[in-house]
View 1 (cartoon, rainbow, N blue to C red):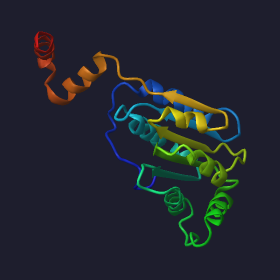
View 2 (view 1 turned 135 degrees about the horizontal axis):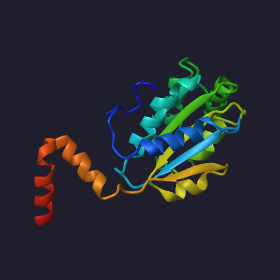
View 3 (view 1 turned 60 degrees about the vertical axis):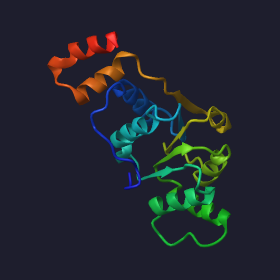
Length: 195
């Protein structure tokens, strides 16, 4: 992933099984382009999960790009970011449709991985689908969103992965591992129960 992909800790609790399952779904199976939609409330770990997935599978793709698609940017700015990451040429001048067509022509026939993180616009999929069309080359698109409506806008077969809050014990284990020596865990547990 380019420098725009968020960087984080390599030691993350509670998601190894999920990463393995989603990696398998993304890497195996049919030749057609696959779309993974990761959906969940803000701060629940969508970006962290996707980062872990991408770090383990990125080397199997010719091109990869990560774009943070939060609100202030216009749709065309997203594709300029993709183009910067994928094409790395001065081809962005001209009409907006020409931009999308240029991106499609550049990646067509090559295996790509594109991540659209924090998607908030319901029609974003239409632009992605046009610019990164199906070419039966095992390309993958991963989208993360807080908005369940966006998961309904993708009009191709996709895998929607809803992220649920962690089980009660996992957040405490994470907190204790980061903040306390191992021998203090029992004292902290007792204090929290009494609080």
